Structure formats: structure tokens, C-alpha cells
Amino acid sequence: MEPQRLIHRLFLSLWVLFLPFWDFGAGVALVLAFLSAVLPNLQAAKQKWLDSASFWLLWGIVLMVGAGSILHEGASLQTHLRLLPIVLLFWAFDRETIQRSLPLGASVVMLYLLVGGLIRLWEGADASVLVYRGLLAGLHQHVYLGTYLLLGAVAVHQSAFSSRLKAIYWAITLLFLGLLGAKMLMASAFLAALWWVYRAKHLPRWAVPAAVLLLLGFGLAQGLSEGRALGHVLKPVDPYWATGSVDTRVVQAKAALKAWAEKPWLGWGPADKQAALEGVYAEWNYRFGLKRHLNVHNQFLEWTLSYGLVGLGLLLVAAMAGIRRLPKAPWGLILLYFGSLWLTESFMERSLGVALFALVWAWMADQANLREED
Image (cartoon, rainbow, N blue to C red; front, top):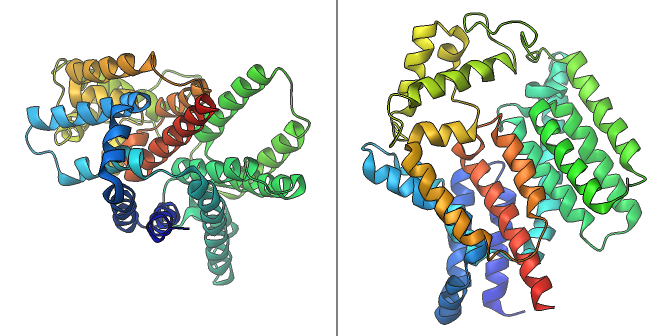
């Protein structure tokens, strides 16, 4: 293998492995992977840019955030750095490297969290350190790590490993996802799985064992942890009492819409959106949101509050311009999973969320382009 390609693969692998643990290190590794892929052949990089229609939706996100930062003062450097994976991964992506690195990275994450939980249990903590937020130990929220683990399992599924090894890896991953207890993640994964079964026209024989493992882990998470319940889903939602997974999101969504209505065209900007949101929290005496400085927990409303109708319009124009030129691929699977997850999480407000979405999009685009070439 050429030294330049080897260096590129090394940096890209480090990016995948650093993602759950170290945002800065992951960013540096991706920049180096980008440079090692582009600098040896600038002409090829330029030609690839001319064939970038499959990334136009992602370019729309960059355009929306960039325009919003120009129109509003005070946008932090972090707001722009967060989008680096969208820009750099277009050139730095290498499917073979990603598919080899993800299973290793996911295995390291599961081992790290499990060993850390067992050590805390040995030191006298209760069993809740092995489930839900106790298992995470502040590493990342479970929706992000759960998505990373799912991608690791998908990479194993598409590899040349034996069927038995694939089944074992999936079993461990599903049990671990259940232990994480991320209800919104499980709902999004379930919707994506239903779409896949509908397209495949049959139910895989491993579907029932998979569901059992997932529910077993989830049952343990609910039984051993003190995680938040769904909230007052069958009663009128009261901001004063809202503390559950569902009623808090209802309050936050309503607060975002109320704040957005004051600046519907351009929004509040990335720097002032949280203050505008918490102003409504204070007006409604939403104690839980003020105490934890909660964001909207809805990516669509998060962007609406930040960039208004003008920003969303830029994103929509870019998406519509590219959608007719997308290579054939199961894009619905991606849009259904992330679209449903974005309804309950401000997923793209963290660098790991942006990186995971860009990674999945680049992965799918690469596979689709290979099919067209064949």
C-alpha cells in the first residue's frame, strides 16, 4: 500500500476511534485525514467537488449556519468547528477504513463503559452504575453513543465475518443498547427497522431474539436505574411540574415556538437562542428547564429558533437542488432514523451528532456511487 494512503487510513481510523471520547483529538485526526487525502492529488479533489450533488443537503446545513452567523453577532468558534465533519469527510471518507474501525471503536466503548461501571460497583456504588445514565459516567448522552454502537454493528454486518460472529456482535450490541435505556433512540431504531423489513418484504429469523435481547437490557435499565419516566403524558402538561421524557419535550417545543414567533424570519441566532428560550421558561416557571438549561430537544425547532424561516429556506433549497441528483440508495432509512431522532433530540448541536450524521451520509453516498459505477 502507498505510504500516503496508509497515512490517510491511519488518521481516518483515529478519527473514528476518538469520536466518543475526545472531540478535539477527533477533529485534529479528521483534518489530517483530509489533508493526506487531498494534498497528494489536488486535481482529483477538484473533480470530486464538481461531483458533489449527493452532499448538497449537508452543504445546505453549512450554508444555513454560515449565513446565520453572518446575520447574527456573537456566533462562537465552536459553532463553526462543529460542522467540520460535514465539510472534510466529503474528501476524507474511505469506506473500507470506516468499516474496519467502527466495530473496534464500538467494542472499545462498550468495554470501557462496562469495566468502568464494574469498578464503581466494586467501590461500593449501587447497581444503577451498570445501566442508563449511570453506565455512561458522563462520557456522552446515550442517543449519541447508542447511534455509534449501532453503526459498529452495521459495519460488522456488512463485513466478511462469519454469520456466527455477526450474530454474537449484534447480540452484545442490542443487549448493551437496552442497558443504555434510551427510549427515543430505540423508537427511532424501531421505525428504521420497520422500514427495512417493509422494503425487504420479509421478517428476518433473528428479529425475535433481537427484540428479546433489547427488551431484556431495557428492562434491567428501567428496574435498576432512577431514570426519568415518560411524565404526565395522559394529563394536561404543566410546565411547573414537567420532569419526564415526554412532557418536558412538549414544554420545550412550545417554548421554542413562542420565542421563534418574536423573530420568525431570521431567528435569534446561535448565540442568543438559549437566552430567548430560557426567557420563556422563566415566564412559564418551567423549573426543570431553568435548572438544567435545557435546549429544545428537537433539531428542527432548534434550527428554526436559531436561523428562522430564511435559514430553513436556504437549507431546503440546497436539499431540493441535490435530491434529484442523488444516486440510488435507501436514503429513506437514514432520513427516517435521524428525522425521527431529531424530533426528540437536538442531535446536531453536538460535534459527535454532526460527525455521526455526516459519517452515515458519506457511507451511504459512497456505496450508492459504487453501485452506479458497477
